[in-house]
Image 1 (tube, rainbow, N blue to C red):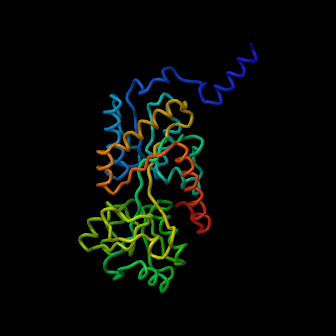
Image 2: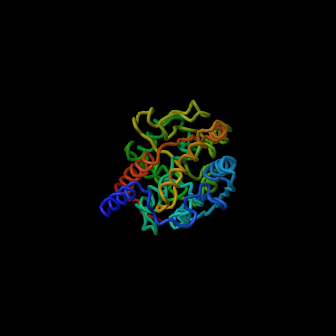
Image 3: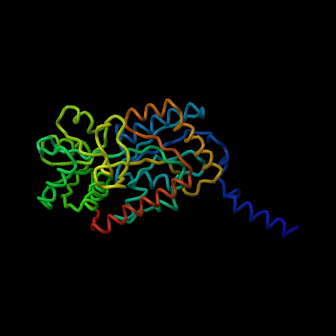
Length: 325
């Protein structure tokens, strides 16, 4: 009898059935307000997507879902909050590439992105656009590379900060193109745009939504997209991959994660609900209009992707000797 009980317990533990669960942890949705934490200030792509998804979740679950913007430290503050969050399913995070796959290569973090945060599903992704000030008189990526090779270390590109997606896209292109462009970090996209439009910096790996209006006005020239496919609303802008650098891929992405010790049944429920929202036609249409591509997948797929991105960006950070500001 004791032997059968021990075997049963081992099986249940292996299946993730037994956990030290807080009271009510198996309730879904939780019987209290659900918090979706976002690591960036209101108004940007992450905030837009989070609020859109939160509204749909609230409708589907019949429960209040609030977005909590905990900006700062490149999103790391928000990730730490959720890593230490409640284990009743009432808090999830709209996480991002920086804290999940990049920051650990630049600094010591107070949380482990793999152990302390549990993957739920990929949320959305989108490429950057390499844009230049019109006064540079560069119209193609090949011309940009030619100017860079004639002026090593002098042609500059701006980013939203050391280790940001816009920075590492530039460093990856430096690596594959064999050029040396000078990185100039800023503390936000609005400051970059101000100096780029004034011609004080030459180039920027910008989000499509930020650069779009200025491309249309002719003040900026879009040379290439950093993704594997052309942006739907800028079909004439080629990718870096198709412009002579096969396989080049540097995406911004936001993924849903939860506290690492959240019981597996709740992880699975959250996965199902988020995929349901991300595959709904109204949400997909609204995201696509903002240049955001919903990309839901399995929990295992997200876990593997986070690791693969960490490996890729870790190599670039080491080889190009990038250090935190």
